[in-house]
Length: 285
Length: 260
Image (cartoon, rainbow over all chains, first blue to last red; front, top):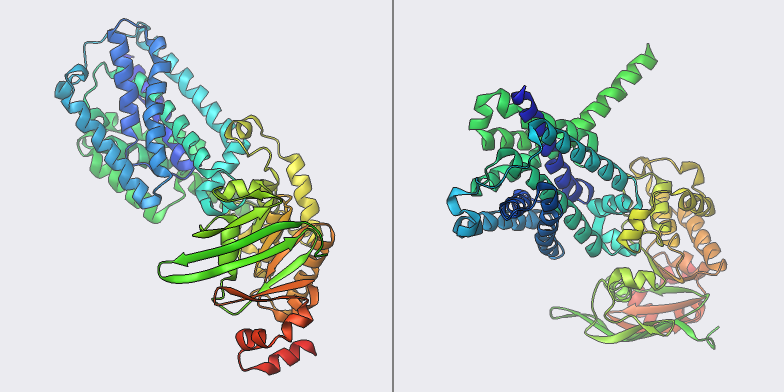
């Protein structure tokens, strides 16, 4: 039973992490190849505060705040560079984060952090808490998507220059997207740290950033149900198939390439195409 | 009309791209309620002056003043919120939104001014209703729920213009709205522009279609090589020798055809 609880918890955390990137990349069109850094900021903040005697729930807002602070700083670069240059810049931020972590003794350096106190909810309680948090995040994402903010994000994703001509303060909206998305990544990071009970520099490297991006792309960039589905499935795969865990970058990097090359709309658009095809067949017969 | 206070003043604007002087000390005024035609041969600096007004390019000297407020140093979106609207030369509809939603997005300007306000609002019925009225004004209301990718250029040109109009501007800047349309469509759209102007929107129209410009504009400004060479009543401007030489080159026949 513990094994299943652990897998469901992993899935819930991945859904949170993928939805947080989906807010930035899917909703607002700002690509990030260093999103694992924000998961890391949240994880380290939560682990350190737990070590200092704070309870798990108290660490959550601080983890979100610290991740969002870095997120806004990175967001400022998105005001200067776009698209492929933004991808390279965020990738650089990811490497920088790992590089800094390795050198800090207070963060455990190469060895990482492992001896911070338990969250105290028990495995089942922690799983339920993770599921509740990811559900709240789903509701928040759906709310944003159908609000005027979501409409503006979508416009910026498609044609930022035209949005400016329509009087939209695109810079401010992009910063909001980065702040929200990275805060939610920080939240996911807190759960990640307390779930695995060990975090180190390698937990938040380039491979993790590619993995989460492939989850978003596989599900369908911007589609909330698609991203939930793909994050849940793709995060459970390494537990089911050993080789996927061994060749993570190859599998997820390859998946990312195949999806972008052949199915840019992801599973979400495949499903809607299939649905349209079936209803058309049914109408014809 | 010229005795009124100008709505827009362009004062001594000079724009350089590297070593090229795109605009050289250009000044003109736009008066409230008028339909001003801005014409000139290719490369004269017409689009550049619109870009200097909207803030896409920064002049090295000069001022742009809207209704007494200097626009210098303001970002594009801030100038738009001061009461400008631009219909771009190349149509840029949002491909994932239907025609009516394209217009409604612009009509929601009050809700989208600040991100937190945009987050607090979900309902778009009011904006869609005003978008529908605007679409009716330009005659494409029956296509409201179509996607832009399925529509011909004539419809998209109207969409581009009506989306700018949804911002409820005091000054509407139109960059070649008739380009690419056949003579029948161009005539219809020029009449629509005239109609919009008659509803109280001040319009600056950049256009190559001289026939329609002569027909609908109340006043013309002529640019050539980045400098203003003439302004005034359409007929007077068109008989100006400088304009004939610059704008029409040797083909004076074309001018005669326009007059005919």
